[in-house]
Image 1 (tube, rainbow, N blue to C red):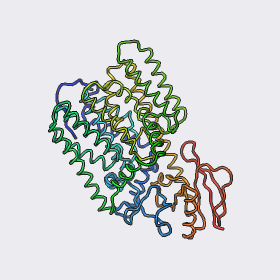
Image 2: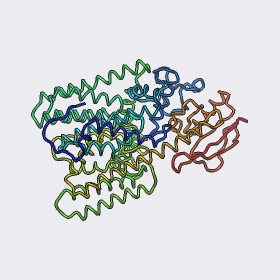
Image 3: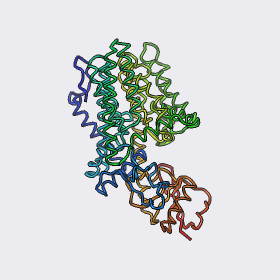
Image 4: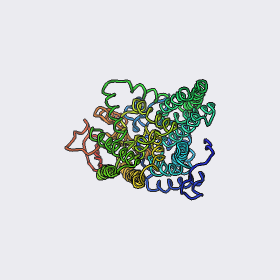
Length: 561
């Protein structure tokens, strides 16, 4: 971790004991542990987590470090067309469903020792480190001793949500944020350019976890070198810093590639990165969808991929930015109060729809709007905001397509959200007291909404998936692509196949016939009418099963004639 600059700084009103990093970090960790107890450990915020848990479970059962989830129907489906876990691909002779190994192997001993709840210590530590990085950045932007940024990022930001799920996001954000701390110090001449090697290593470590880390690394290093060259006339230092950052970044990537080849006999992370990048330059309809998803995870407050959702999200951004600008000046704040009431009304309307995802960066991080409106006060602040904004188009162009709505706070944009949020926290003292309380209150309320949603989601999904895996039919065929992956904690308890399309379903039935299966359960969303039974099979029963929130599943049983 980077040491802090010395010197006189404004002290916060927090007790002395809470201004000790170890104590504050430990307390934040305890809060995360308590919050995690409200969630069902058999279900998750996203299906990627289910894939990792399924892999951990198989590794534990086999006593091996090979990330191979296997496939019970490989004999009849050698290409894995209807593999139970969606997005499983073959690497050598292994069936792999994870996209990164460092997180998996770091969590494996914890999982073996204490199951999923103990493995959650990794993302929790990631969010604690991210909050500490936010404090360090706030100090460099003139935000006093930075403890307000620490607690807001730790307890009232998307990092609070991602601390409670076995995903790589919080650890990736922590590494990228601390790399930004190093680069700010280099740009501000607090540290020599040789420290760029450390920033590069942090960027490379983040890139083994999150593909978008490569984008942030490129933008952050390029902008830092540009500022050193044009702003400080330090051309040689800029060249040295850029070269060392590139060298540092390559070290973790090379180590990760070696790890993948040693344990999975193939490249996992680089294959995913290359596939994601190639998809960015594909056909026109794909590019159109990318624009729509970019609008959605930039600001949208509802997980609906339609123009009204984007417009409401950007209206929220405009209202929040107006409140920040208007209350930072000496004039009448009446219009700002009206704007604040309008923003609160948009949130209340969203809450009226019931618990669910809030996919927009600004909607889930309202203080970011204050940072974007008022944070451009110093070279360091302009650098950080420039990195956050400059990375957005590249992230949108290369992010995985199809997952913009069912996510919290634009998960590919979490680093930008952190940088904007820190700038907003630093700007808060410039606002009228009521406006400060409004921004912090909105951040706390929307985070609490996310925590409630995650608790409901995991408990509902965990109970539903347990019920499906207890059914008497020997095989479950899912028409919902990610359903079996959602239930990674149950992987191996029952034979599943995943067949999202009619063609896939027909293929899956063929697999069952070759396997000698005489009965199976077909799971789909609510089914209307009387769907035709597969040829040679007859329907013998139909049930409805609650899934998540108001969403029900239809389970139809078929027997061979």
